[in-house]
Image (tube, rainbow, N blue to C red; front, side, top):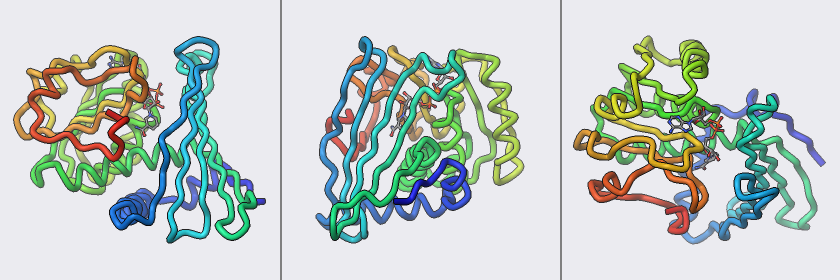
Length: 252
Ligand SMILES: NC(=O)c1ccc[n+]([C@@H]2O[C@H](COP(=O)([O-])OP(=O)(O)OC[C@H]3O[C@@H](n4cnc5c(N)ncnc54)[C@H](O)[C@@H]3O)[C@@H](O)[C@H]2O)c1
């Protein structure tokens, strides 16, 4: 059995490759050769911590697999990631476990690349101002992917943890693909007023901005919430939207 570490994933998986792989997976889904069941959630030690399982099987690939993610928001204060994910891959011929993959970076690149696919399809071609709310690994990967599909001229960053914003901007300065400007927002709402593309990548339990502040024609990737008690987007935003797109209805 192969054991693939975070570092090995980082060395081999480019964002471009992830975006095209995800496009293929969506095509397989439309063609009916792709199976992914509903995700299973399990509360652990109260309702903040969650274990979740996802499965996927594409007839066009030699393996099928599952991903387990432990979501422990309090881990950050312990110096650990708030989400820890591992993927198991099984042989399509025999069902034998053939690989275990550390999947924190892979999950982030996958989530970011999904937003890259969505942004490429739905954002205006002249969307140049990207606003990112949240400064964790997911926020990082959203930027890596979106800068591949739109010409970013300005990046605006916001987080309730102001120390994290400065460190995050330093990280993005090293990986930005053109010489775009990066600024810290005064608030989430100030960011929203100026952005053509908005990504919410937080662990928030209440809306992170007022939907009245969104400019017409803005594209939003809302990726942080994954349980019924989490929320990033308010009802005003939902009512103002002319299109809401999801690959899973229960994801709404
Ligand atoms: N959609 C998906 O496929 C997918 C995949 C993986 C993770 N996630 C989810 O994405 C979220 C972010 O993941 P992460 O690993 O980057 O987490 P993280 O904990 O490292 O970062 C979240 C950031 O959000 C900030 N934040 C919280 N509330 C805020 C608010 N109201 N305004 C501004 N900033 C706020 C926090 O200060 C923190 O810096 C998590 O909820 C995670 O479970 C979604």
